[in-house]
Length: 118
Length: 118
DNA sequence: TTGATATATTCTCATAGTAGAATATATTCA
DNA sequence: TGAATATATTCTACTATGAGAATATATCAA
Image (cartoon, rainbow over all chains, first blue to last red; front, side):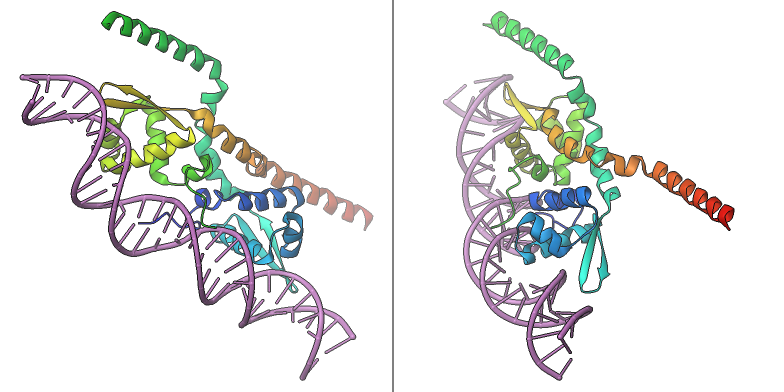
């Protein structure tokens, strides 16, 4: 099998940095037409359209036709699954001091064992 | 250009579901040798070794040789960047109820004003 | 040493991404 | 209708993935 398609889920879609840039832009500025995104990010229009397509297929963006423009809007709920997964690990880095101490103690025990077995 | 290698950063490394399974396993059980991971996930050993290699290269895991075993340990700090990126959007879904309520109240006030001025 | 165990590496194959250039489609305007 | 604008789609080329099978490497045990 090859790598999972980028349209498989939010994890895959968001792995591409330009797509995160698009998400950030829409979060800051609200819904934008393709042309505005192209201008803001200084990327070729086809590139932007393709990235928008991926994000939309995954559900992170929605589109609304407005005349000849297409206005893309962020649907952040779609990112919640990723957030929830990462939130499990929040304690690990907020309690970092404890862990550093614990690791130091482990290393010490190991060193003691090494000497003992030498 | 092709898709960025999975070893580019945590975003790319973690897009693969089996790699998330490995991370979850190590988070629950603490450091484990390859064999234990293979047994727990019921995956072929080479598959596991390769996924471990990716996670290690990105810094999400560290290895420690213990006899003929290699014990992998979670280094969750490496996930913090992803978490921080997603945390920006937390308000969008946690305050959703508040926003709906607020909007409803505003509408009510407006309705009241309309009546009053009628 | 010899064999067994634990893990990593290599090779092949099928799949698919991304950029870039070119082109197609749809909509508005004169 | 015809031109201009906004956006999407297609095509090519290169790269890399991930599974699976086979093999290599390292360590332990008898």
